Amino acid sequence: MKMDKPYRNNEKADIARKNILRKSEEIKGIPIRGYDFDNGINYEEIIKSYSSTGAQASNLGKAIEIIHEMINEKAFIFLGYTSSMVSSGLREIFRWLVKHKKINIAVTTAGGVEEDIIKCFGDFYLGDFRASGEELREKGINRIGNIYVANNRYIEFEEFFQPLLKELYEEQKQTGKIISASELVWKLGEKINNEKSICYWAWKNKIKIYCPAITDGAIGDNVYFFKSKNPEFKIDVSDDIKEINDSTIGLKKSGVIILGSGVVKHHILNANMFRNGADYAVYINEAEEYNASDAGALPEEAISWGKILPKAKHIKVFGDATILFPLIVAQTFAKS
Image (cartoon, rainbow, N blue to C red; front, side, top):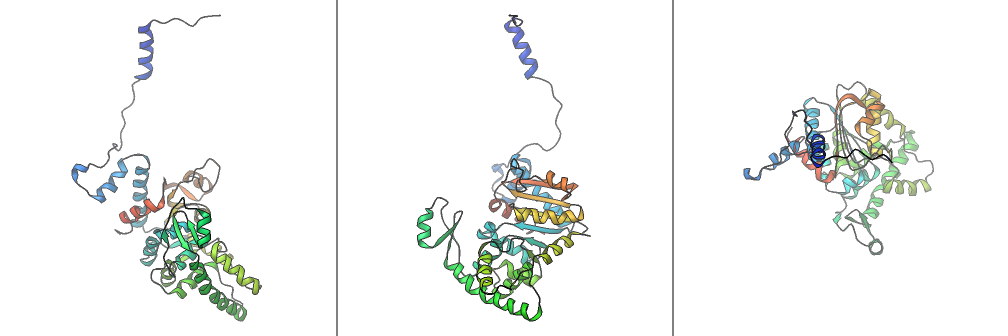
């Protein structure tokens, strides 16, 4: 068997040094630096320092820059959020954005509508991710992560919602008008008449909240109960898909801010496909793309479909929106 060429120790070291200490090009750009607490505590400067910190901090800094540009360029802004974010304290931030007309269209799931209304009947409370499901079930307490919701709130929601469904059904029988999902959201906001509600301000300011999964969750449960007794009752989803798709066509600038994933993410991006893509896109979620789901898909995949423009400014921040979104709003919408 042929032996490898023998090397003396100094020859081995020379080869290793050549491989390891290879000369490089000098790098230009943003130097990596974090916040210096010798300058005291300045929260705005701390957040600004994220841009030069690296990792997801710098992606967050980029997201803030992109949203600043959306605002400055007067882009038409689509905001998407999942129901668990309304379960959390982000509800107050969404309400503020809608109240002050900072966004143009919202897209959420059924839980993102009903839990906004349900919170008008009583508070949700901080719980424990590791609580016993059996013990909570015995007490009639529902758990959303580490958030507890007494089942009484859903009983109160049924008492509020069933008469509204009856009213809408009577109108349907008299006029033939079938209510759309977004009109139902406005009607809920009007009837709840509570300034703490996202839906209330959406109705008052005529900002559409689209809910493509309207029959999910407690809304769906109540529609099931009502339709079991009134089989001719209907909710129209075709009006909404035409409205949201039409809303993108002809926009000078379109910006999307999508918190979480699933149907909310796809619904907004798919609508922007009708104008050949959004000009700005910010994603915040923790989903990975290895299983080929749209949930984890990066902006580059959306570009391939024509949902985001090839030259668009875009970023995905991997992280928890309950932590990141308040910082983003503080540095963007709340300043504008």
